[in-house]
Length: 270
Image 1 (cartoon, rainbow, N blue to C red):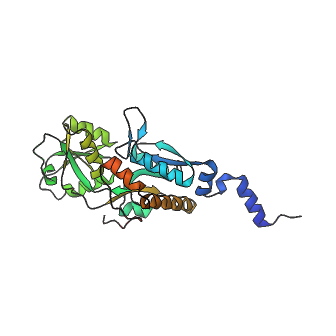
Image 2: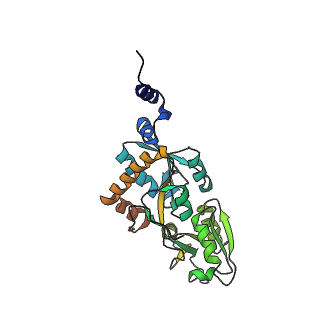
Image 3: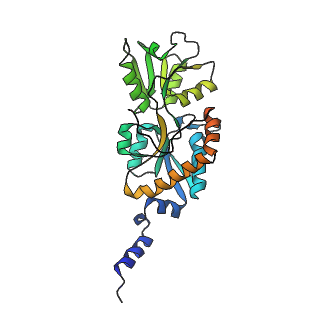
């Protein structure tokens, strides 16, 4: 007797894991693969024991509990993370990344997890930089292919003297050059530089107020139809983690403060 076409399709899907959508595959394998860089403290970094640590590690541990899966981290330099996501090397990106108009057109952002407004980090004993505009005529570093670099370029164009930009594969290299006085400042998001300054107060200091436009950090997925059920599940998990207070505790642990972030990625101004 002939097998109905619908039954044939269901049998084929059961035999071929690739025929399932991303959520079904993650559930079947019991593993959510997450791409990130490990030079973006306090979100992701390698601690003194050589272990991957940070806010993202703790946050995704909670997401894993909600989904009933383990988290497998895939580590790459930041400028290779988003291309690797598009190539299917992992399910989503931790990062996190600043939510911008250009990125929203290309990727799906989930519930923001922290503020991302850009500010300046300087040497603790450098009295020549008291406010953001004092970087005019100086050399400032930022991460290659980052939204922070883009905002630095936009801001620098408004200053009376040109700012020399120095691009780094990761922010740790920029901080090292700042500590060695090879550059005058580093432009990065306020939560990141506040964390760095708190760990080395004799070396670094934050310049306030931030110069960047109000913005948020979010986790990223593709807009491929196959990925949407999985991203919906992660979004639901993040909102739950926010609503029951777990997110606030993690923010206070890693940033020293909690952020009032929207449940849905807002329309950015830049």
